[in-house]
Image (tube, rainbow, N blue to C red; front, side, top):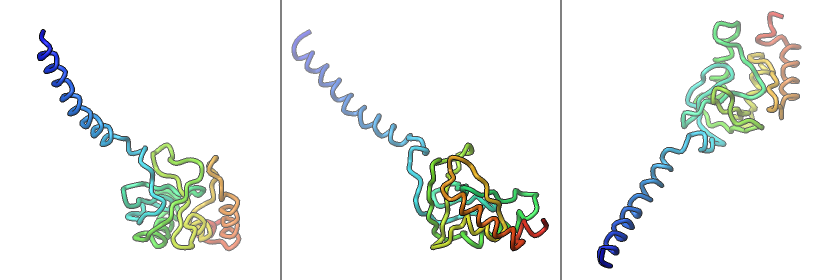
Length: 162
């Protein structure tokens, strides 16, 4: 093989590498898992799923930390759902992370605020949800438990019948 043939082969390899590298880079970038992309700190609520779960812009499902609202078919489900809608639907919310980023269902775990309203606590205070501790996410648990005691004492919502 002559020197010209060797140079020609090396030139072809170089051209292939120059073309392949951008393709590999583009493929890698476009196929990054969504979980690697950072969740928003603020977002508009586009849908309320129930009394303690929402969907925000970007399609992120958000589960409120530290509370548990009635599930479909349980007493006060509809009231909790409607209260959550009144508080957040169509509004820009601030999402605060505690320790865990997501639950086992892939939902973001967040404390949610509309302006100066702490939504998680407001739902508990109005009697539409119970304070529930889900360690390690317990930053505001004592505050949520105090809101629950207030709702119990005033016999609001789910505490009305007890």
